[in-house]
Amino acid sequence: YVFLNAHYVSSFLSASFMLLIPFSLVYQFMTNKIYNIDFILSRLKYYGFLALTPTIILISTIELFRSPESDYYNIKLTLLIYIIMLAVFYYKEVLDFRFRLKRVSEKFNYQDSVYKFTQLIRDSSSVTQVFGELKTTILEVLLVSRAHIYEVTFDGNIKPYEEVNLHSYHDTYQKQFSKVISEIGKIVEFNNGFVMKIGERGGKSFVILCLSKMNTPRLTLEEISWLKTLAFYTNVSIENVMKIEELMSHLEEIKQQESNPVWLKKLMYTIEEKQRSDLARDLHDSVLQDLISLKRQCELFLADFKKEDPCKNEVQDKLVQMNQQMSDVILMTRETCHELRPQLLYDLGLVKALSKLVAQQQESAPFHIRLNTGRFTASLDLDSQLNLYRIIQEFLSNAMKHSQAGEVLIMLISFQNKIVLHYEDDGVGFDKEKLNEQSMSMGLSGIKERVRALDGHLRIDTSVGNGLRADIEMEL
Image (tube, rainbow, N blue to C red; front, side):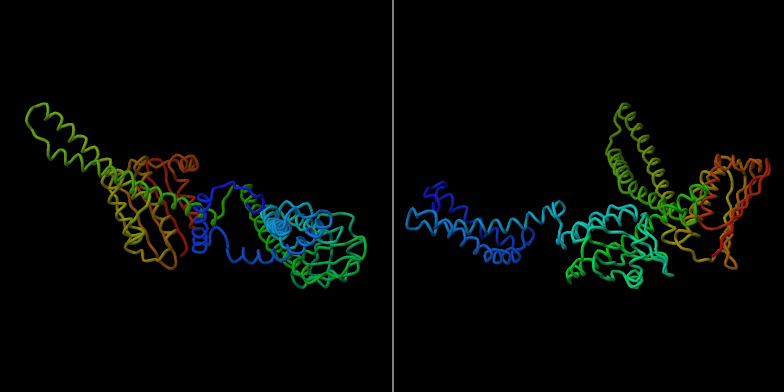
């Protein structure tokens, strides 16, 4: 009504919406999630002051070419232009923040260029890419026309980093190169540019040389601070990328050797045990609990079931059979959970867990199992205990499937900073010359890998009809 002299919303409806203002302000002050009120108020004061000058200039210009249409025309026009200018200044900052990665020109835009640079090097997979992003950023912001990267060794030898035909540059500025290699971010200026150390690795320093076609003014304090910030970010990124490259190179060498190192095997078995533990927990918390609940419902139904006629007796017999089958499934699920995650090992240690494992296997094994752990007193970390447990578990599983043995002996001994695991059975054995073939079919390959993860030694003695003997030695 003030500006256009017309009503577009009724006073009753507009008054009801006025209630939104205090409620929204209270919510903003309490949560501080939608807007930072203090920041907005401070910016409004700043832009309110800036908007005064263009408002006065526009009003004066309009007054020169137009006569007022009413007594309050100048006041209305002044307020309207002032509000428009205030909104323009405010939303300019909002748009600058939103599009800080897509500016047409980055000259002297220090703060946003640092943010843009960090976002770009985050996705870099090589040192060359990191250096390329650094050069692009400096060329976009500063008054320089060329940027080159050099390697400087500890003995003063200078060479271009993956660039050619640049020998004249580092010969000309050799003194400046020698002055900056003492610390990251150090800058030495000269008439048409500057040099700065941006990183180091393996006794080498990486230096950037920035040149202009004409003499450039001295770097300001803001520009020096900005360049040092870029140098520190670049150095951290170089460290990370080179470590990843070294790791990938090491893994490629391992792949060609077709042999995994001990640390990688330990990592793989640790991940495997974590997956086993998670699976056991899921089975116990979901499937097993559902089965137990279903079994209890069946038992309650059987307890209330009346034996009155043969038909009901037949139904009762089927329910009893289903109840027994559920008991078997529950028992099997519990055993599976214990095999996946031997809780007793976590709670009471390796010896108690092996005793329970042997007792469980003895219930279904067609042979007699003797376990001797009386001379085992070593203190092992959890990963080593798990690996020894899995090795013995695999030996017993192989004996059940392949050995046709009558006696199985397992001895676990610790003495003189050594641990010895001895396995022996009187089964059918196999031809030792075909050990590699039997390793795959009998699961011995898994045992060999776990022994390597323990940094131990495995010795197998067997022949057809003379059983199997295996000795594992590892250092404490």
